[in-house]
Amino acid sequence: MSGICALCLRVAELCESHAIPKAFIRPILRANGGSAILMPVGPGKIRRGGDVLKGKLLCARCEEITNKEIDAPTIRFLSGLKQQVDRGDGLTANFNTKDMAIFAVSVLWRASLIPGYTPVQFDRRLRERIRLLVLYREESPLKLFSVRLGRLVDRTPDGFDGPSLAHFIFPPSGHVSGPAQQMVTMAMHGIIFELGFPRNRAASLQKPGYLKDGVTTISLLDYDIFQSEPIVAALVNGYGKDYRGHTTLKRKKDM
Ligand SMILES: [Zn+2]
Image 1 (cartoon, protein in one colour):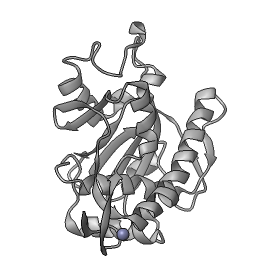
Image 2 (image 1 turned 90 degrees about the horizontal axis):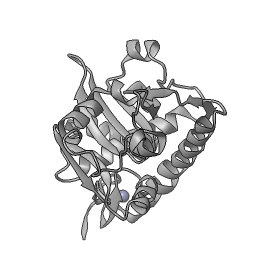
Image 3 (image 1 turned 45 degrees about the horizontal axis):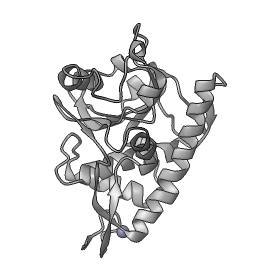
Image 4 (image 1 turned 45 degrees about the vertical axis):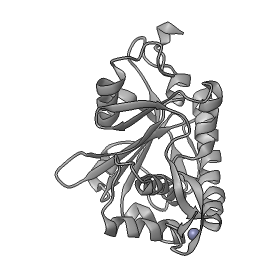
């Protein structure tokens, strides 16, 4: 099918592009026979899905560039850092915060372009700015928005264990946290990302885990899953009704 590539805007044959990288989805599919990803898909809506959040978005060249130059290095870094933290070997490793921010926003941007996927939406002007950020990767996106990273944990007794949280996909979902700031939350591979538009300077000074411009290290601090309002809302609305035996998320006592 040919169409206009969402990144370079050329008319071309379009590829099936994934918003959440396949590398994060594949292990979950393998572990759960092809369909057991818990996907909140909107306010109060949750579904178990397989290979979701994809669409014909990019030409072959842009698909290859985003896979190899944006997704792959970040996935390698995050997987390594998470293993390191899980082993108790330190919370911080070297990576460019600008590259991490570009990865995070490119996931949101791709999701926002998938027809029918409504939980994350950008106005046209912001969407165009993000396209240029992803295309040229020159300007630091941290001037436009803030990014907070954390390793998902559940501190409640009998709460979710690490492997369950690592299999929890929370697709990008917008959430207005205040009168002005728009917050988008997503989780994959046991890691939560919070992006604030525009950049929330005050919060990024007060709360740990925010990426800072010009810094070459990234820390993965613990983030309690029940501290995330949108995740809690999704769990309460959709998940609470039928979690037992129906999802990949298992309470520790069930295992
Ligand atoms: Zn293209």
